[in-house]
Amino acid sequence: MYKVETLGRVSDESASTRFTEAAKETPSVSAIQEWLISEIGQLLSIDAGDLSVAEPFADYGLSSMTGVVLSGNIEEWLDIKLDPGVAWDYPTIESLGAYLAEEVQRQKLAACV
Image (cartoon, rainbow, N blue to C red; front, side, top):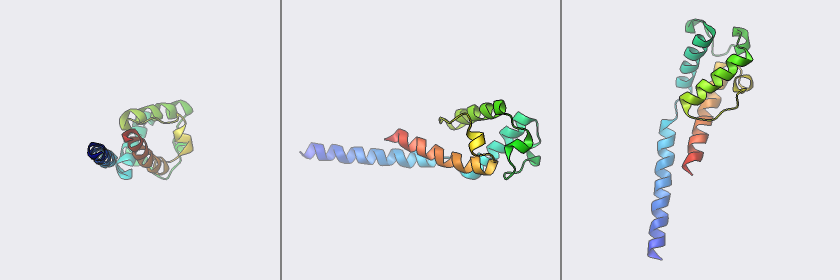
């Protein structure tokens, strides 16, 4: 019985450590927004300084094809899975950045369980 309790505590501590590490690895909303500004600027050939976090992607000419490319690039950068239409569900840098910060943490914590 003593070994089972000890193993249970070790397992709980290990899960706690994994959760803490996953949370530390989660980029901030502002870091994600900065990356999105750079990435969208490159994809659309727009100077990053001309992009607004509150302006809809459609106003910059983001096509469905470019949106899918953006989604794939985000998946690769953040090591998460996304719906290819995520840019249409969260149509601004501001809304997409906030969503991604939460989603990264959710997926990384789920992987720890």
